[in-house]
Length: 150
Image 1 (spheres, rainbow, N blue to C red):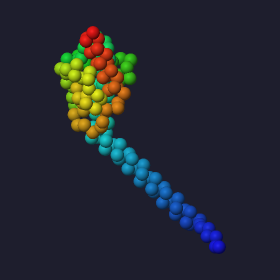
Image 2 (cartoon, rainbow, N blue to C red; image 1 turned 30 degrees about the vertical axis):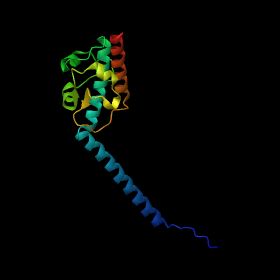
Image 3 (cartoon, rainbow, N blue to C red; image 1 turned 135 degrees about the vertical axis):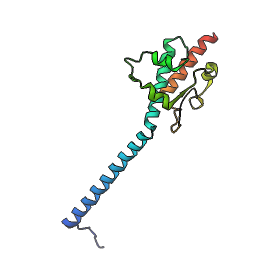
Image 4 (cartoon, rainbow, N blue to C red; image 1 turned 60 degrees about the vertical axis):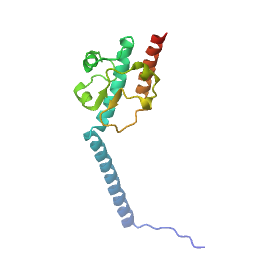
């Protein structure tokens, strides 16, 4: 039986290192281009803005005995200091997020996260159905709607 062992010359090793280095540079460059492209298209900013609004509306409801905000002005006047989402760029948020300021909260309380549409992105590109901030918001709506039913 013949034992075949690859013998590399220093020139082959150097060539292989150069090829691997070039491949690594290409991979990093493409990764950066994808991130920049997503940011320039507003995808990451939009997803962040939607998540922030899930939390802000949840906090607003807890601070206002279960009342849903009636306008952007209600949310803008709500203090955000000390929260993970402070400061909020409301001008950017308004460009990326649609909020129904008059939802039927009894219906919202019965919705699953994938059905929820009272806060949604302008250009949907991401499924927020499992987002913990949305789940928490729906639990808050259910809690306050349950209190009203009793």
